[in-house]
Length: 274
Image 1 (cartoon, rainbow, N blue to C red):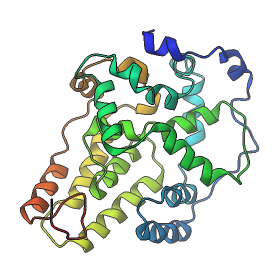
Image 2 (cartoon, rainbow, N blue to C red):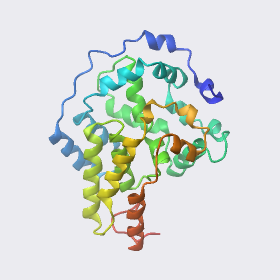
Image 3 (tube, rainbow, N blue to C red):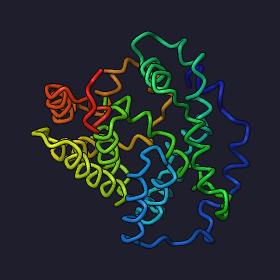
Image 4 (cartoon, rainbow, N blue to C red):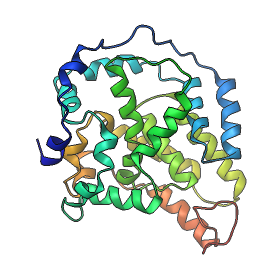
């Protein structure tokens, strides 16, 4: 166990293991494509409205999520990760501790990304809490797994090299689908790709970039089930090699096409690049 994980290791592991693995009161979510489409249209009106994203995931759930979560939670590795990393946002938002790790490490790359984007792991948690404020609460071990799927999202941006531009977000979702196959990932990813094509007519390989991301995610083991504290001190390129994450060529090609048109990939409304 490294120093960072030791810092955050909780004394509540016995309490956690005393919880039911899965609260049977949790509802079985059903596929509701029309509802997902409605919320996607709302998302297009305000792309920063994360609540609409959560609603789409609620309408297009991962059918085997319970099975995957229980399998990991009852495994030796799952129990070890749970003890070392009881609350991932607390670890990821301690930039002072992360910056003490070696230059060129995943920790530094993560801090650079989050600080440049003005993001925090806790911020995403708060957005989800606002969405779920009127929903029933379930006190089980499964909730930790659910939270963790949310909390690794920005780490995926760092590991894959996909930015927070419209195509980058679509690619991260497609990548994530191959790890956590909720239809919502592909729905938002490809619908966003089609919308990008409508916004800017060009030869940029938008849909190929999204398909490529889906393949890259399939080659990578589930990040949610990796020990993040083991990966953070390692050189970024070594982490990518360990997780079999290779460069996203079509995403880069799309950006190159847009820049050749004097269009900023981070503002695909046709405004001139700075």
